[in-house]
Image (cartoon, rainbow, N blue to C red; front, side, top):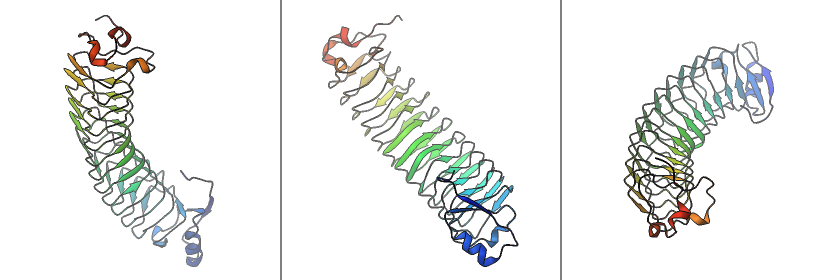
Length: 308
């Protein structure tokens, strides 16, 4: 997980304290601390740390480079505030309550992910965690994997590279403005009030999608939603909203296929289907003929008929 090949140096309990301090201050090296009493590490360590031990417990540590503890079943760093990548994929117990900034965090087997102070990080893998506690998280420079949580709650999050929380029935990200792909299949009412730009939004069982500030998106996949609020959306990939009775996208200019089988009315005054490449055709409704004035384009040029 390091960005460049670093020198690996083995240290143990026989290593002289002054030598250990000197090595720990060198950010270009990784220390193999498998047989070292971790309490001997300086509070502020710049070197990376590598261990094959089943427990990583360094309560005095405040800063560190990469921490590579791939075989650790317990990962505890109760005072750690700043680090590079944290790699503990096998840890079922993972605790960094004071961590404020980190690179990628790999804690995929942790039963819970508690990072009360975390504000900025790289990608977060907490795929098996039943709870995700990140009340101060603002920016994630990669995706968050949290497939095991029933509640996704990130009240300060503004930017994220993506989100995978397929089992979450509750989704709370009121400050989110920019996101990659969002997967939240079991959230019944998906509301992201400040979201302006996103990748895919995929919510298989959502009854409503409310994104009043969304301007640019990739695919919107909400096939069971009866309520779709996208008043500022200008560009999108495909839009699948087969359950809505009214399809309204007053600012929409560019999109791929639009699936709205049950819609009986359409409001897309700025949409020009003839100006965009849609190799599969535009499928707006299987059940209702589209009046040409609603798209300001002849029906024949904008609708591909399909058998029921």
